[in-house]
Amino acid sequence: MTTRDDCLRLDRDDPLARLRDHFIVPDGVIYLDGNSLGVLPRATSARVQQVVQEEWGRGLIRSWNTAGWIHLPQRIGDKIGALIGARPGETMVADATSVNLYKALSAALTVAAHGGRDLRGTKIVSERSNFPTDLYIADSIAQQHGMTLELIEADDLPGALDADVAVLMLTHVNYRTGRMHDMAAVTHAAHAAGALVVWDLAHSAGAVPVDLNGADADFAVGCGYKYLNGGPGAPAFVWAHPRHTARMDDAQLRQPLSGWLGHAAPFEFTPEYRPGSGISRFVCGTPPVISLAALEAGVDVFAAAGPLGGIAALRTKSIALTDLFIRLVEASPVAPQFTLVTPRDSSIRGSQASFAHAEAGYAIMQALIARGVIGDFRAPDLLRFGFTPLYTRHVDVFDAVRHLVEVMESGEWKDARFHARAAVT
Ligand SMILES: *Cc1c(COP(=O)(O)O)cnc(C)c1O
Image (cartoon, rainbow, N blue to C red; front, top):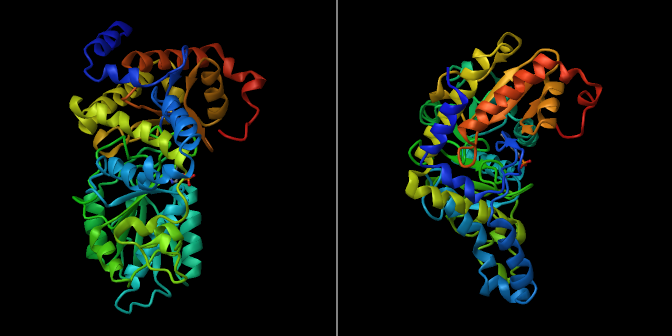
């Protein structure tokens, strides 16, 4: 079995190890929750201060032009696009993931309805175990259009794709299990059934290789504060295939949140809405410049990873870390108390490992957090551990498992203070 010394050696030989220097990981913390909120990049504070003190403080409103604020949604969108198989000009940063999902799903329906298809009685299909906000948004849109939202199990694909499906909306990597869909195969099957596909990349962007154009996807959204390390509540992103935005350029197709900064010429202040070209119409209101500055600092770390092999090299390390964690837990004396719910096969797995513990998942995670091993808990029974190859070391994985064993063997998780539920789990 892998020893702690083996892990130290793996870290010493790891060409990606120095990327950790781009982050401030607090002393005494083993952070396995980058899939929920990424660690603070070292460059972020200074960058945000510069925006506040110089660009805002001195430049004031001139900075929309002189500091390029107005171009931030596209500039950062292109940097994220490079991580997800988008070409320049296809991705925009805006709003929250939930809001972008509303826009993308609504736009997909206008595509589906184009050519006279009556959407009433047709379906939006998603997975029952999808992240709840995705289901809530889809349900709301389905109701608006007289459609139904049908929830299936991942294993029901592609059989569930019948002629009544207008749009398939899936999260590429499941937030609970870490199971990853084959984006190209699922998209192909959906297209063959006459459906469009909207992909949520919340647990994919910056974590696993994604090729939206290669997969021939239709629309995609994703999150800025998880693997992209953009900070709490960082703006999200949205992408649409150029074949759809091109038709939108003929003003046939729209997204419904037609705000002034998605207008073709916002500063003409015309009373009629004229959508901007391409993906630009997916911007709605004024971009949150300070948050965008923080997001850009997070996304820029991936540029530093480029010469070291980029996402492909990060993926290899992520698989190694996740495999190591699963192996060490399963070889430990506490293994019988936990059930792995994440696929063992790394080709269908994102960058996390989740273990179910029937009675005490929440308290065990709280006891781990008290020891500085930070993962999270997802009701009703999952301990979720995310592995971010930018800053997680093999030795962190080893030590996290040792803490888990100690928490179980000492019974310290039974302490009452670990059982009180906080607002955020
Ligand atoms: C994290 C996450 C979100 C977050 O949505 P917000 O609107 O940014 O809160 C949405 N969907 C999925 C699948 C997620 O994992």
